[in-house]
Amino acid sequence: MTNWKASGLSKDLPPANVMHADWQGVDLAVWRSASGRLSAWVDRCPHRGMRLSHGFVRGETLACIYHGWTYGVTGACTHIPAHPDMTPPATITATRFEVTERGGVIWIAAKDDPTAPPDIAGFQPLRSLTVQVGEQALLQALAADAPGLTEAEGGLRGTVQIAGLDTQICLMLQPKAQETTLHILCGAGAGPAQVSRWAESLRRQIEDRSAP
Amino acid sequence: MILYDYILSASCYKVRLMAALLGIKLDLVAVDFHPGRAHKSAAFRDLNPAGSIPVLVDGDLVLTESTAMLVYLAQIAGPQWLGEASPQSAARVQNWLAFSGRLNSSLGLARLHDMLHFPADITACRTAGHLCLRELEAHLTQVRLEGRIFLEGTAPSIADIACFPNVALAPDGGVELRDYPSVRLWQRAVRSLPQFIEMPGIHRLHDLKPAPHSGAAA
Ligand code: FES
Image (cartoon, rainbow over all chains, first blue to last red; front, side):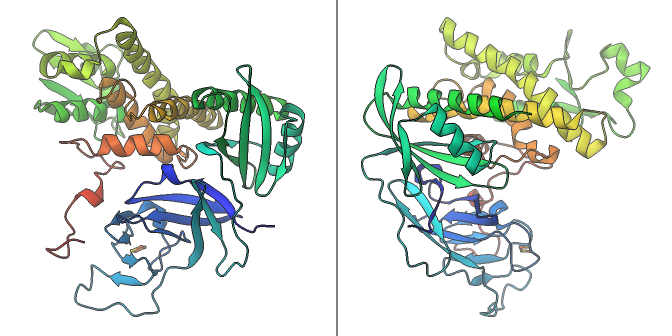
């Protein structure tokens, strides 16, 4: 069993970028420094609680957009523009989560988690797509619509017919309150463009059925 | 060239942005859209009977649709912004210009509802906005698979400028962009264009500016 949650695809977070991620209902700011180091922090600036995911990366630091407080990869505040000559106290620190990359997926876990993210070797990351149904409803729908997929660590894996080809698919699930994000990876079979269209179509079917 | 303009309007910004990217200087005439509703005044409707902004006037030419203004500006100062010459490419650019109208009547109206209390079915606006964003995300996902980033071809075009403002301002109307990673990266590419200009709610990339507090930015 893994406690790590798929939270995005590596290719969607290039160096010097920050994004929001939902981790079990906790809002996180996930960012990659210019040199490529990943961090996942609670999405709340220690200054006045504004969203760090609205900030920007400069070099190896993340700066809050609101008043420019700046944090290094350890989470410690390194600069306060209103007091440029002061060394910020060590107590001003962003709250960190564990974050790592495996198989082109960004994985997040609580601090000091002892488990490892799933091994998804052999699959190419394609895209992330959010479906407006909760995790359980989505799993039921997928069991009906894509019976070739079976539950595996972190999500589902198996073979699906796409454009007339047996296609290896891996879906990593990121459950959110009323919706679920699917991180889609593909192996041998149909091409990425076809798998992408298949996923769009599958989402429409599932949402149409669950619509009141 | 005169642009009848309102600073908070996504459609007016579209035209200001295109002009800036092309190096065209516009004479801006501020219209008191809110709260004055000056665009509905008799005098303004003598210029544009539809009572809408922006309006672009160049000599005898009076344009009242922002996408037509993009075409005009590109024709005179940067035809490469019109997209590639093939029938398919020209038609796809037109498709995006029309699509930008859908963005305006969904995401744009949601924003006017939330910011300026425009009457609207806000749930319907946001739902329609997400539908548009899904289409954009699907297309941009495909574009990225081909190693590109802009909506059509390898270079930015009027298609990007037409669609960008209402997408970038979507959070003002309660539509978050967090589930659209390719849209996020596309927006970043637009914001990185040389001579990009800002409007309230849309900022230049701060990371491209020098650090304010030290000469040696990390
Ligand atoms: S809230 Fe982040 S710097 Fe003030």
